[in-house]
Image (cartoon, rainbow, N blue to C red):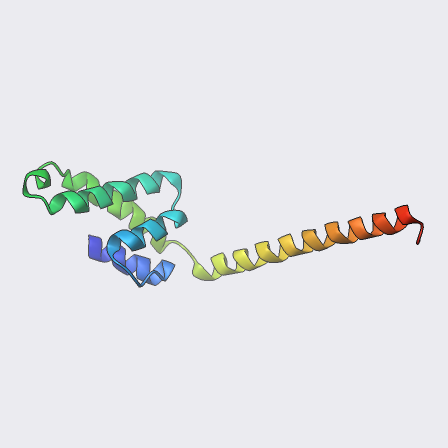
Length: 115
């Protein structure tokens, strides 16, 4: 289950370096709020499995369902679309900034009587 999540982190989010906990913390930003709780559940179960007494407390079916929900969501992501959206968002913010600066300069020139 953890290996499948690591593979999805690698394929879809390009998270290749670091331990699972480090990559999961970075992947958390790309997940919607309900899936963040699922990721926390998977990470907690992973920590508990290493301890003999706590390993018995892990609900394997719930953790498996959480991991499956995360994997399903991440496999549905389109990297090309996300990159285009990020580029268009950056371009839009730059254009708005340019319009605001232009309006301020034009207003200043009108106020000072140069136009």
